[in-house]
Amino acid sequence: MVVETLERSCEGSKRRHVNGGDVAVPCSGDELSNGDINAAPGVSAKRARVSREMTFEDIYGADALLNDDDDEEDDCDWEPVQAPVEFVNWCCVNCTMSNPGDMVHCYICGEHKESGILRHGYLASPFFKDTGLIEVEEKYGGSSSATSSTAVGFDERMLLHSEFEVKAHPHPERPDRLRAIAASLATAGVFPGRCLPINAREITKQELQMVHTSEHVDAVDTTSQLLYSYFTSDTYANEYSARAARLAAGLCADLATEIFTGRVKNGFALVRPPGHHAGIRHAMGFCLHNNAAVAALVAQAAGAKKVLILDWDVHHGNGTQEIFEQNKSVLYISLHRHEGGHFYPGTGAADEVGTNGGEGYCVNVPWSCGGVGDKDYIFAFQHVVLPIASAFSPDFVIVSAGFDAARGDPLGCCDVTPAGYSRMTQMLGDLCGGKMLVILEGGYNLRSISSSATAVIKVLLGEIPENNLPIAATPSREGLQTVLDVLNIQMKFWPSLAISYSKLLSEWEARLIENKKNQMKRKLVRVPTWWKWGRKKLLYKFLSARMISRSK
Image 1 (tube, rainbow, N blue to C red):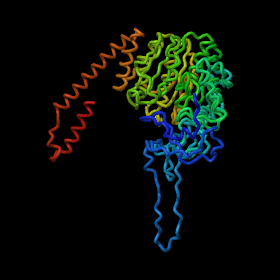
Image 2 (cartoon, rainbow, N blue to C red; image 1 turned 60 degrees about the vertical axis):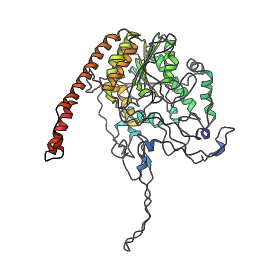
Image 3 (cartoon, rainbow, N blue to C red; image 1 turned 90 degrees about the vertical axis):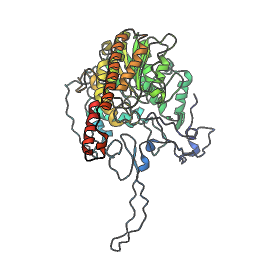
Image 4 (cartoon, helix red, strand yellow; image 1 turned 90 degrees about the horizontal axis):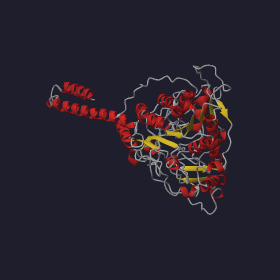
């Protein structure tokens, strides 16, 4: 793989994702102050063209930002002339959206411009300026890290992986993601405190070559000799990125060994850069090395015969699927937005089931739209994930835990809550005696990822989640249709799904019949149309609205 330098990558617009997928903003038209000195050899320092593609600011209506150009002089002779007040736009620390300088709260997520989310995580108030003081009510027992059965892998050197050029709009995959989660865990007394820390080490080239080609490993290592480089228009690297990627993979490998050998019961890898888009010979989608794939193969080297990788990141893990699509000893299940291939990365259709003898060991649950929430995910777990996983009977479970399907995420635009993530974690805990490794993938709203990650770790610690989610979830119409499509394809490989498919198909047909009846009722029972323009127009509006609500 060829590592592109910043100047070359700037010669065109950076790829943006349709409907809120993986996006990187265009490069600035101004030259870097470093000039030719920091560029890779043989690359000229020509000025980058300004992209006309939509950025995050355009997507979220930043064209409406305040631009005060009123230079008119005050004609009052008794009031002193004052210089015009200049407002500097600011980017929200929580969601990275740009805001007018005179606003105090982000107009997208509502976060205060000086909130304490990086000091206290989601436990800090989003509405007020950080005062440095916060009280947290402890609802857990007196367990300590010395007696804990849950391990957490984290190393501050992974924070050094960042985009070299300071842009007007921050890259969504930024060091603050780990800072916010770590702050939440520390403030809540979870880690450090209740979880066992794992010492970080850099994974070896030989271990990485179990997953990636030597050319790919060398390409990532080469970035340590450059101040800045890009694998794709949205996948950056600086001189510290290669080490961060090795530390992330090393932590995941060691956690997998510790868990499978029984030294700890489960664990959470608080790592970056993420990994599930990284394939056998390429880096993409913010990912350099595939951490989940490394952990799976290390677990198998330690004795695990069958490994389940459950990927709930809102984007399909195309890299993980590519690595294991011919492997019957690793079952890969992914729940993601797909929208007919129009959502990044475009892979992960329901009929992608594996190849060359691995058919049935790749299960994709491709949502057809955004806004998918807790009930749809839990419904898919009940009717697809758990039945197939139980039939597979894994020795070890890995969760590629992207939290970009969480409510408020600027890229995922879905509606999963911390309660939903904790319920899914709890449901997976019954497999293989609870030997589970959760690995951080995506998630770009700091408040969402910190609250969701904390909720997941509390379940790993044995806490019973407090939520009002129903045991039998009722999905949306789109969610039910997606699950039916998946069952129709996968029951060829997992016969136990046939009964569930027949039952759900009957429910689906009954729902369609009920919808047709409601439509007929609306046609047959109507308020006289002429009331709309007469003296009874108020009564017309009232009765019409009431009939519509009843039909729903």
